[in-house]
Image: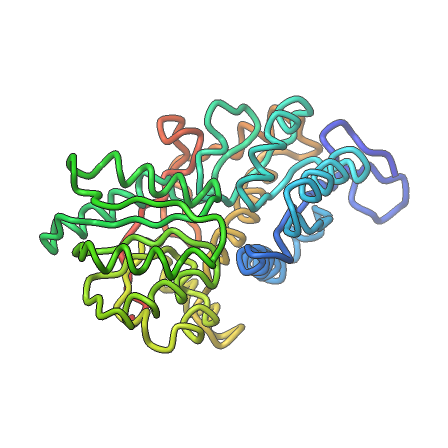
Length: 341
């Protein structure tokens, strides 16, 4: 088989498809963000099972970008330089930000399922997650509705989580964020809990990686804190709630609204509610399918890149549009949910 510049295979064997797009899945399949990688992979595979005709037009090559940023960068370079993929689906902000210049230089159309503004100013990268500003506005509106005026924020040192806190801080009135702290290690959380409990804010925004919200919430409740806890879609993961021993009950978080049809389909297939990133993985494959339908043969990188920018796209996450104004992102809405819903 010969590979075109766009990463499609041209076969000389009778009966094989003439053009096949090779899509690299650069997913966190280990490490702290493993749950996102697993969910994105589950959503992508679900779509491919449902649409075998599309599955026959592509190949997928999966690499784990989870253990560390240097290893993740190496995994993406392998997909581009050795596997010669013609498109990418990526997770994990530090890795995605690091490889963005290479993706632009090699003209690899890419969908990034990450929380920060990694696609800002990029030509070949599109963000397929709620813009941080949309998440922050949903939280701000919730705080206003509940008449909450004093907020504490604790954030892990990770690009997506830092972007969420910064977006919220910009939207709140001056002085509303009465405490803001970044942490490098979970050992810092008991001290943070004591300081927050002493200040007694009306709400605590927790922008954390897996496992950290439960630790802070349990310690806050032990100290008698009664205020509102606000988290992220990480709280959709059952393991988060299991480790909290009830301390996270009533916690709210911004999330993308899913279509009822997708939720029912996921429950039929897996017996559970979709986790964070599952619908994004599903919609990423649907976007590639819809883009490829515009071409009879191989699409040039520039053509595929443009075809991935859709207005009024309908998928598992509802109907939404690409927006350069949303920093080269799909302008996914955000709604507030409770862990007890």
